Amino acid sequence: VLLIHSDEIGWGDLRALLRSIPGLAIAGEAGDREQALRLAASHRPEVIFIGETVEGTCAASLVAALRRGPCPDSTVIVLARRVDPDNLREWTSQQVSVSAYLLWSELSRGLLERCLTVALSGEIMVISQVVARAIVSLLQAEARLAEAARRLTPRERALLPWLARWELSYAQIGAQLGIDADTVKAHVRHIGEKLGARGGRAAVVEAARALGLLPVTGQGSEQGGW
Image (tube, rainbow, N blue to C red; front, side, top):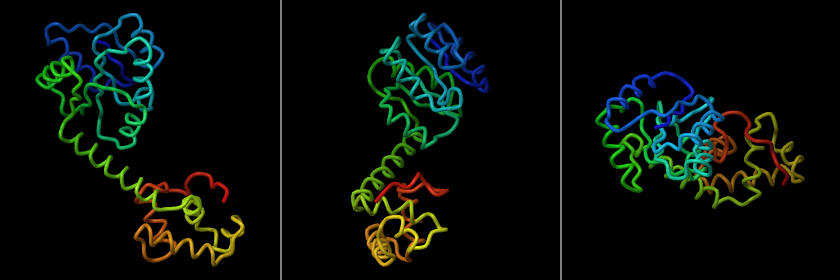
């Protein structure tokens, strides 16, 4: 077993639980990416326990590197403090195959034993009901985003970040895009109809943020051309 973590909270209890399970031995512990890759190459662990974040960032890319390198077949068990949708997206986007995704609050010897038995015996991923509900919510949100994005034209999507810049009037936005203020207003009306947002510019921006087409706070990413 290889442990990869960036903080010590909870890991002492995990060590004790692992040492109480017959047949398991902790081969090493890593506190950063470089050390994790080095220890994985030297020990070739059968099981890897990794915190969801390592060195302050989502550990999905590190697991992907381990899969491509020294540990293509290792059983990987991810431990998270809470279900973070942004981190779940990272695990999905990296297309990383993990055997279990558990919350620290759920951890017990019985759960670990059951998890290892299932994870080592096949392709089934072990998750709790809490994590399963979060994944379903994430997939539903991504489906809504994809559907909303399909309804908008490329020009309408490009206009959204400009609309979120409250310091700019319709005329000023139009000047940036080479169109007149009335055309901007027409686009806002069409976007509102497609997103089911009534109430003009503010309602369109709020709906776009709710659907993930715009960041929740701030002015969004750098505006592109028309």
